[in-house]
Image (cartoon, rainbow, N blue to C red; front, top):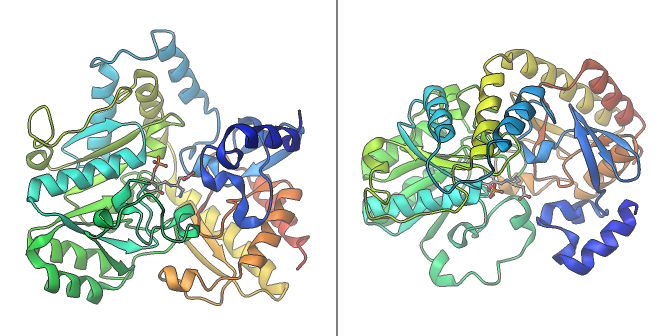
Length: 419
Ligand code: KE4
């Protein structure tokens, strides 16, 4: 069956025919293509078409698809068994590797998704401080646990309100605009010692990419320290993406807890939360804060994650950042030559090109983008063999597998876009 036929069948079995809303391509008024396989920086769909990928499974595949070392590690692991439900060496090896790269993570726990990581980190912050309230930022997305579904980003941004989330749950969720430190100060002034934590994407990736303003992250650090609240960096996207040690190493800010996902699984389901030993020791079975998971620390996923981090240690992040800057400068110039105002926000190998005069420093400014122009751009780039995020409020990613030829073909496809 071709993608159209597969999509029709999928819609009879799964809501919207997908297992995650973004994949339905509603934002770009399109139907999804069904991917048969992937290799390097390329995807191949069920209709025999080939695409240059800039989604990479929403971030995990920074090395490109089927990196030989990662695939070999997964094959080797699965030949030993797929899941034990008991401690295994791989959990120690991946935790050690993460702790070496992100020193603030003295102790950690593996889970199976970013949602589990952030949900558990919030519970830990509440259990550790004995406080209920917490601060998140409008347009930040921390997965779909109830408490976070207030003014969330990513696909949640397209769902007005969120049926099924009782207001009693989000009553403790305090909101501020991203980069608005004064608003956070006001929340602490009003709620002071009732705030358990501030959770933030240190580089926002779910309202499109938005960089932290100078002093914003340090300001959050200082406010949390002053009021005895925990600072949680949600590095599910930025971890090992914006530097080999994530955003906290790149910006030199130390959070109390960090959440990870995506890249650390090497394409397999892995999430992780961790931080100061003294805080983490409040987790069961040592402490009273409960969390558990059947497939946590899965040996195959651990092996793929470890192989990924080992391979990343050989990669030149600065070179990829320079190549990504050149690509995005080229895309922006082409759009401007077509009369379309665009703003590019970027860091390392992540970027968003907004159809917007800019600047884009928060969700309100991100929302001022021309979504119709993005949808037209997305559809024509897809027809031109380029697979971009099917939503204007997501990041696009380059990888260590992209070639100069891939980037040149991408620019060529952009030159053919008409509005
Ligand atoms: P998962 O539960 O999807 O593994 O992770 C949730 C999550 C937590 N924190 C951040 C900063 C995230 O970006 C995410 C998930 N990201 C979205 C896309 N931006 C996943 C893709 C999807 O929802 O289909």
